[in-house]
Structure formats: C-alpha cells, structure tokens
Length: 157
Image 1 (cartoon, rainbow, N blue to C red):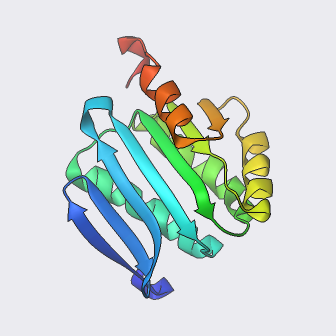
Image 2 (image 1 turned 180 degrees about the horizontal axis):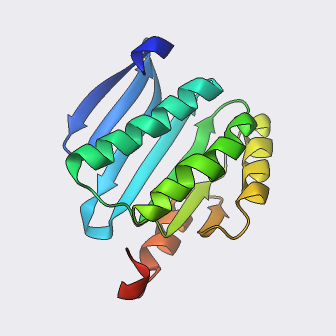
C-alpha cells in the first residue's frame, strides 16, 4: 500500500523505522518496550491517503513484531498542512482497534504550522472522551506526562 502512494520504508532497528516520499522523511517511528510506548514524529506534508497508509503501516509493524502499545506520543512539531480529513477515519476505525489492542493514552505535541494546528484542534474535538489524551507544547512535557501515567492491571487488556 505504501508503494502505491510513492512511499518507502527504512527499518533502522527492530524498534524503529522511517517512511519516506522520495528523499523526504515523512515519519520516524520508535517503540520503547519498557514503557510500552510508541513515538511517531511527522515531518513535512503528506496527503490524507498517505497519512492513513502510514498509520496502517505502524499497526502492521507493531503487530508483526508482537509489540503492545499502551502509551503513544505523536510529535507534529514539524508537520505542515492540514490532516483534518482523516478525523472520522482515525477515531471510528483506527483508534478503536488500537484501544482493543491495549492503547490507553496518547499525547500530541503541537505543530508549528497554522493549518496543522487547526487540524489537530478539530481532531481533539472529535476525540471527546474515547480514551485519555492531551496536547502539549513540547515533547518533553508530553513524555513526562505519558510515562508517569499508571494504569490498573485490570484496565489493560
């Protein structure tokens, strides 16, 4: 699916990969097993179809490796442009499956780009109380918050 959209991957380690369009890095993904934490850093601009394909690739990668994501950080600091069109898909298709697989909380780092910020604001409105999520100014704040969350064993599937 990625190739159909002009994207390719580079697996850096068993816990990390990147997705590129030509020579432009669009996504850097890392998994931190000790915290059951995924970290996704988006760059540049991607179409809605490319964003969906990247999320699907993350799901495939995590499943193929047998990882479980309880916490997730998405750093949008360097993302340009709107992604508001994926909101419904993200919260009706992707997030319910992620929650079913163990996701309990996510943190987003605010983008600098005006249109990306508007899209994040819209996504936050759609999210409601589906699961625990917060938006932060810095990656450090997001990491501090999410790694200090504690969940009862019964809450984790």
